[in-house]
Amino acid sequence: MANSLNRVMLMGNLTRDIELRAVGGSGQQVAKLGLALNRSFTTASGEKREEVTFVDCEAWGKTAEIMHKYLGKGRQVCVEGRLKLDTWDDKDSGKKQSKLKVVVESFYFADSKGGSGGGGAGGPSYSEEDSQPQVNTRPANRAAPSAAPMGDDDIPF
Image (tube, rainbow, N blue to C red):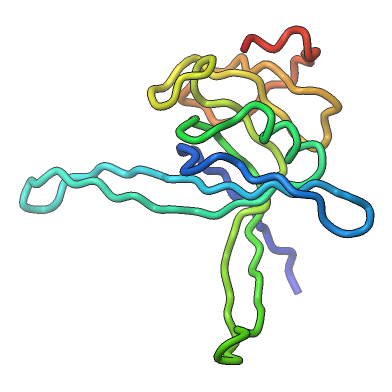
């Protein structure tokens, strides 16, 4: 069987403040967040339309903690991760339920300092492989984090 690829990269605005909680006996942190992804297009008749897609995401460990600390509702963020399908039996009906979500493995701030909305030059980024946040030195329209390390005292917000 051939190898498969499960990689997702999304940029959108947080639909709510990030929920952080500890799970299991180890107390590992998990963050739950929602992203709104906007798409503008013109129909065949020339009418301008906008479509919004809402995506549920989760982050674990240090990524979850940093996202919770620095991000809030309305903030624009770029996340990279993988798709995960959760399945369970509904308590009331007993029927199988499922939900597709993104497990965030790295992210970067797509807007400037702390404003919600509008783009900017980008900001710090973080991934599980990093021990500290990083500064994004790419233009705002590029969705890849840089590798320049940065300490907590250097975070510009």
